[in-house]
Image (cartoon, rainbow, N blue to C red; front, side, top):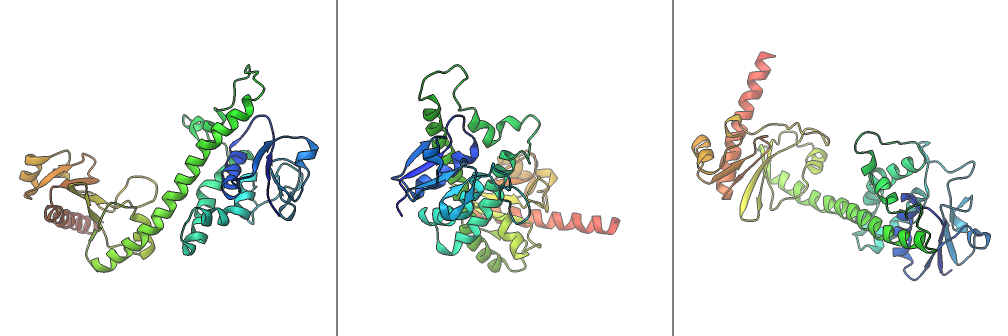
Length: 313
């Protein structure tokens, strides 16, 4: 079967069919995107994939709608949008087409589904309604701002806007997948560094990279700080207790807060200490040796504070 047409509905557009189109146009780059509600287009055929229109879900027939009675649900009962259905059936092929490692495909498919696809599904079905000042800045809301204005009467306005929005949706989707893939690459490096650190409280990495997921996965609860090079300097940073929020396993010393260069050197006693954020979550040094020396001081002070709190408790 040759897929010559990718068929979705005409008129206004939403995030779910835009993001479905991101997946399908990569897999079928020579197929023509057709936006129509005409029966001759939204009737299944061997030359097309139909999504977000047509009133049926039948993967074998190539139709992926979710608006009909008895619409498909995930195993946990949450609703699919067309994006979720397309991702379920074509997401793995899409990741392969992006050139990602075969042994990462399942993990990336699951992580993207949970963090990106599912929120789109829930929002499109009205099961998730963002509120507050940031509600209008969610990806679905921003994509919908690209629709033509109500008084734009140009005959191809909707289609032109759709394709402009499609390019933007592609950028966000592929960037998110790229970030998830980078985390998996970082995980291997971080795990090797954890093994090298042993029982030490400081993790030294060869470059800046996502490190918390691998630390948590490895059960390295003893680690308090991370040191790594950045451009010509070295960074000393804390490790967040949770994925969300800013609370750290240990803060940098109070006496360092907001200081830089000579003032910081005088207080911490380390030549080459160059900066400490007032929030005490990151510091910098001019050399690796200085960064590690600062880390040792920070560890000693943090452990002392933990012991004091334990006794007081």
